[in-house]
Amino acid sequence: MGKLLFLILGLLLGLLLARYLRGPRAGRDLSAPPPRAVPRPMVRVGDERIDNDEIRALIRQDRKIEAIELVRERTGLGLADAKDAVEALEQTMR
Image 1 (cartoon, rainbow, N blue to C red):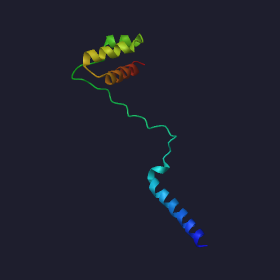
Image 2: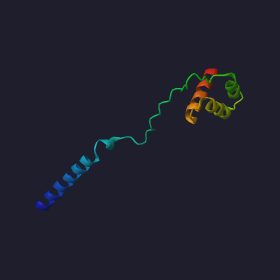
Image 3: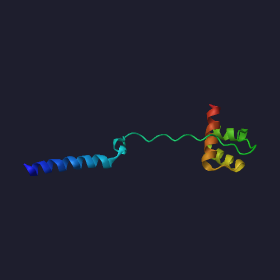
Image 4: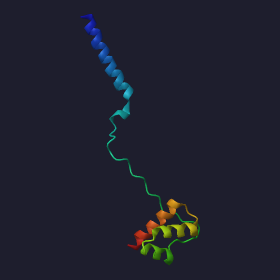
C-alpha cells in the first residue's frame, strides 16, 4: 500500500511541476494567422512633391516599377517608402 501511495504522489507532483513549468504561454493558439503589420504612412521628403503627371502616366500604363524608380530618383526615398507612395497615389487615382 505504501508503494502505491508514493507512486500516486509522484505522478501528481510530476503533473503539477509540468503544468507550472509550461507557464502562461501554454494556451496560445498557434494555428491563428500572425497579426497584420501596421502600414507605414506616406513619407514626404522636404518640399518635393511626388504627385506629378509623369508618375501618374506611368501608373496608368501599368508601369508601376518605373514609377517607383522615378519617385526614388527624385526624392531619395528608400524602396519600401517609394513603393508605398506610388501605391497611395494609385489609390487616389481610382
